[in-house]
Length: 202
Ligand SMILES: [Zn+2]
Image 1 (spheres, helix red, strand yellow):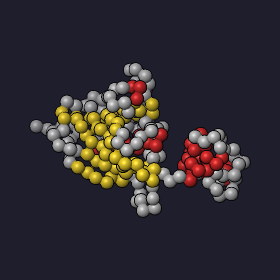
Image 2: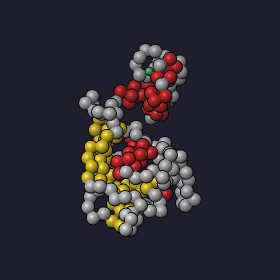
Image 3: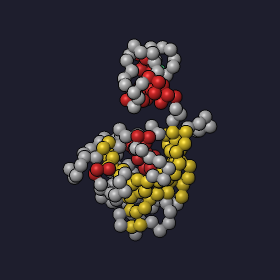
Image 4: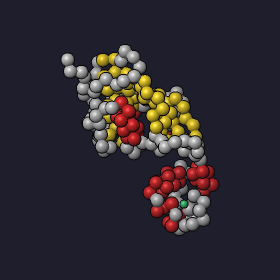
């Protein structure tokens, strides 16, 4: 369904939509998304009343080029469901201290370079379409909550198609956001020190 500008705002404010959430880009995006998933007004209101989900994801560096890791190097994040894959890319870049200077992809079929299940972007969030296989989807336009993930789901993050920094992402837990939550995203665990991105100088 679609909310019309003159409808009551589905947030429950009793104001007209066009004078309420319509004016706030973030709230408007949320309402547009919920409306597209709802058949009735009641469904829409219910969907909007649900708390945001919080995903706990562990990102494990599994190899750099041909070199595997001899010990665990991981960072665990809590992120909200409306976080995009591009946002997650930025979290990983910061937490692993990588230089955000290369293309990246997430793969949801368990295989690298599997274009059917690929979400990609440039370092600044522009979607690009490779000339190999099916075109990838945009990491910047895809939110975590729209990927059908459950606790135990895993996917891959490949940063830099040349040097191949390969990470496995494990969804450890999904819960509702609550009032005790600090500002998210947040890093909840750090194990090991990531090696230098470009190798050590001998
Ligand atoms: Zn409103």
